[in-house]
Length: 129
Image (cartoon, rainbow, N blue to C red):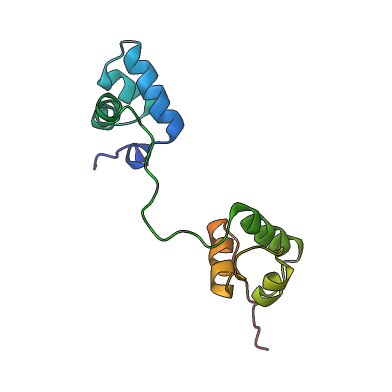
């Protein structure tokens, strides 16, 4: 029977878990003990601790990608319009956005913002008789 590993071990550390690791290390816990306590590898714990020692931080840096062309307020407005009227088209969501200093976000941008929060368009099932 193959050995099954804890799936959580391969997930990314949250900022909360990073803080717990630092606190437990400062309390004198070993990397192995912390790893078992949190369900993580002791190497993950060691890397987090090493980053704390060398850089003085444990959080991840922001992405270096292209800046978003919608702000949080516009993202919330997109979600609000889409959830209040689920059959609304992307073009009508564009028209209902609050006025802002940006150009109007494209339909593709609106689709991406809805996908980020788990909303997607649905087509009705076509039935053949």
